[in-house]
Amino acid sequence: MSNLKSLSINDVVEPIELEPVNRLDLIKYAGASDDYNPIHTIDREAEKAGLSGIIAHGMWTMGNLSRLFSQHIEEGYIEDYRVRFTGMVFLDDVLTLQGKLVDREDSLLIFDVNVAKQDGQKVIQGQVSFRLWE
Image (cartoon, rainbow, N blue to C red):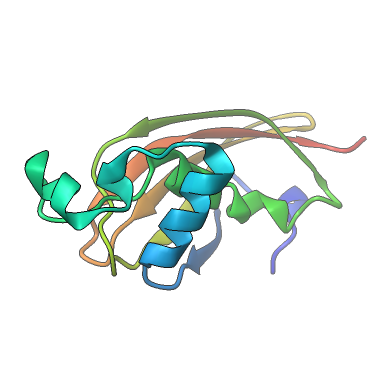
């Protein structure tokens, strides 16, 4: 694991590949988030909505993306986090969390971040501002 403080512009954070998306994780997230929309847990309801199967909660995917930085808590904290949802995540998708340093202002590091599926399709794109402890 590299140190964020030592990164230069255009350096990447070590990517994280998640285990395939599974139904149990989505059911647990539904309970934790109080988001019981059935398109996230019930196949028939997702199909009635025109989907090919259940989809992961966007916020579940966004929450996982923050894992790129949670392993660096001794260096600082996420000060701002903005994303745009650009695709859907289905059961068994394998997601890769990615980030690249694009700007640096003293103790503030700005990263472009994304989540990509196994076929390379980006399902989230955004930016994280990470503040180094001083």
